[in-house]
Image 1 (cartoon, rainbow, N blue to C red):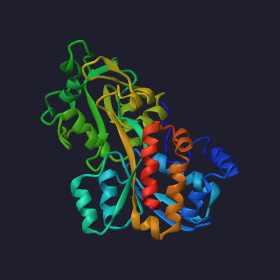
Image 2 (image 1 turned 60 degrees about the horizontal axis):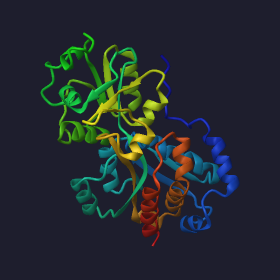
Image 3 (image 1 turned 180 degrees about the horizontal axis):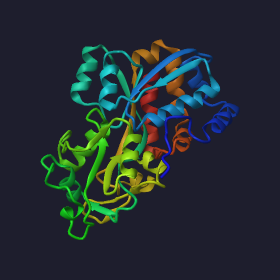
Image 4 (image 1 turned 90 degrees about the horizontal axis):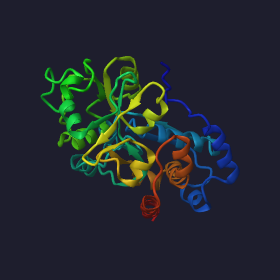
Length: 319
């Protein structure tokens, strides 16, 4: 099975970048905010789910202004907030909203920030493509993933007698991941509550490899990683009480894919935005070109209401 990795420039981004350059990219107000011709470095870290989106934005901006060097890390949402609130990065990628203790750490560190939603995600449960399971209820997911399931729920036919007599192998994000936080809260009812006998990684591609290469395997991560590797994985529909609903851009946007549809964010340091023209230019470009960036990176775009809220938040940051 082939596995496609999303750590390099995505197909079509270079071409799209040229098109954006030809069209002028951001509008004059964005250029004025960032300072046309700005140069310097921009430090971004955080969610591995949001990584491809911010990386795509960085690659596209480089077509317009190669003098801005954007580095994008993937320490996980929690790890990203840790360095962000210590003032070590300009922007933090997040697959969940900032938590109270993280906000307190930012306050203690003198870091004021602005939250910008940049996309929507359908957190996707995947299994090995040879596993004859197409839908799971939220109760079944909890049975598999809840604390205490170690050594007890080890075979698929323990979840449902009609399921295959096959051992369960589990792969998932590590505890610094916002995806881990969101999934455990949505499925197990408490953030961070999970069985521990699974292969954990902050790199979603490691989860892709594990699930695609292991019979009976299951994992979970952002929708874009499934979409990019759909030839080697199978997405499982989720039944939260109203029937099986498959993850898709449509079901994430219309709210029917519950409880696993979620917003994705970047958090911008207000000081970095006001004091570093290159940060302002990158953020302005990011928001002004979100439809093209989300399409190029194969993410679920914001709807009109979400777009207006993000633009309003950016306008407040500019003010």
